[in-house]
View 1 (cartoon, rainbow, N blue to C red):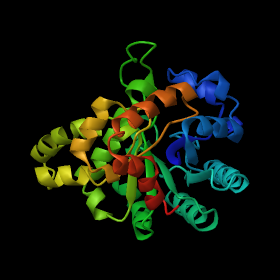
View 2: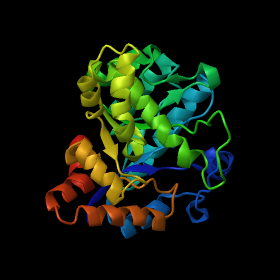
View 3: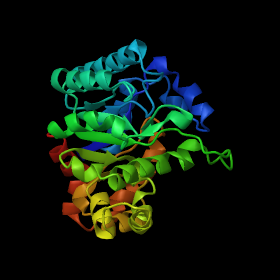
View 4: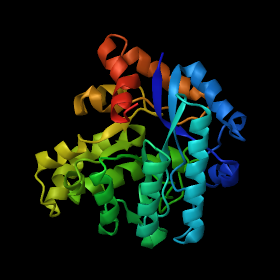
Length: 316
């Protein structure tokens, strides 16, 4: 099998992943820490993955706008590029950017990452800033960044942030990564659609993590209720724009969800992903097996979802 995994993270030791996870109600598998490329290569072999597209977890690099944040983004991108150089054909990467509120820094890093380091795209969080000052990626403040990405016809990997709810998560088994992150992805996608940004920059190819979280199921709700609240797009136009995203399968593959996705978008919009090493190989295997069973009767769809769509999208 020659799968391409578009949702595969790197955990540099400097980020302190175990501590970050604990704060949001998640337990990163102990066997994956401290992370090394060899840990991913072993999992990839077991899961039939030929190439993994590496990205930092959403919300990184941390910190406010400033030189330290810029330097951290540069360091992480050069680290990822070196991993790819050391393991050609096994790894590629989506570059991180400084806090998007730092327009100049973000634009410089996009140029360096795509032109010099040859990143396959840009990894973007659903929002930037803290608390009431946070801005979702469709905000007008980020127009210059989207304009540049559109000019380049760039790929953007959009992942929900670890944003806490206004109430505590309901149970230790239902931490922020389980319940809140998928909805953050949806909110960012919906913001891009209803603000008209998705059709304003049609050349940017946006991948939504985890089948877009709740996006496929709430898109019809947005289509009618946002129109009622003043969105200038028609119901059908809103639905059409939601269907122009790409959706990765990470932690989401099941007969129920994949059947719904087949009714929502063409198979050409779906991309294989695992979310390793945030999860164990066995956890990723369960979802991978579900996808294999679902597409078993259609070799064309199977090949598209497992590697052909990613190969074509990322020019691999």
